[in-house]
Image (cartoon, rainbow, N blue to C red):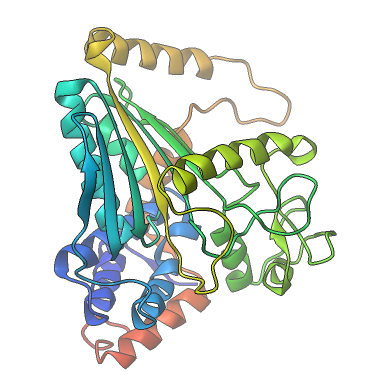
Length: 350
């Protein structure tokens, strides 16, 4: 399993996406987004996804160069049609617009539909966080194939439906939440297959509704389980609410359409902290709160308390220095794509 520095991995990803038809801006947005996911340890949303994105370009499911449009808007809201463009690119533009509205209106929100996979969801609330605002984002895959069985069921009817919230603070490591409402992200099952690893019990069920540790059973008609284990009704309920915000409020609907086209619907909101209290006081108190959490005596077998976002930050510092491990199956797919595009020598993948 090769270990690759982040800058090199970004160059490889961007070059392959450009060769597949993406513009420089689109390719850079996707490659940076994927590698940033790898850096924080979310390998399921990292460069492992780039070959899939290229497959979707070839199938016409992603349209490079698509011009996103505003369908309707007010001073505080925007509805955006991505016209099947790269989710990394379209969603970032949507969040930037929402941040600008919140600078004057203090609270703003948007919905985005007809765009491809948006990658690691935290990237968008963190844009607001860096502007001294609280950012919130939820995402759903529209009417593309589903991955998660509702609590008590054995057939996938829900998406992994992640939720992310980022908060400004005086901390070195950002304070943010980024979680799927399923027990695990679907990409982690793909990652386990690529690495030839078993998965923990409680992640998936097989086609007959039985618990299994074999990740290959997922592609044979199995389903992810909702977050919560024996209390999975909590994750299932959260996923249903995300579906309403990102599937129904956007007009994408629910269920599965025959095309199988991945269609990320997103709901995002931004809250200007200064409209509620002085920003500097808030940032200081969030840092104090994080330190208060961390001062909790550890439980048996624990390494102590980490506040939301801290583990990802520590992992990023380590991987920036030491490089990112890329599983052999993913590395071989990247090499094969580079060979097909006559880029192997240029990218050092021959």
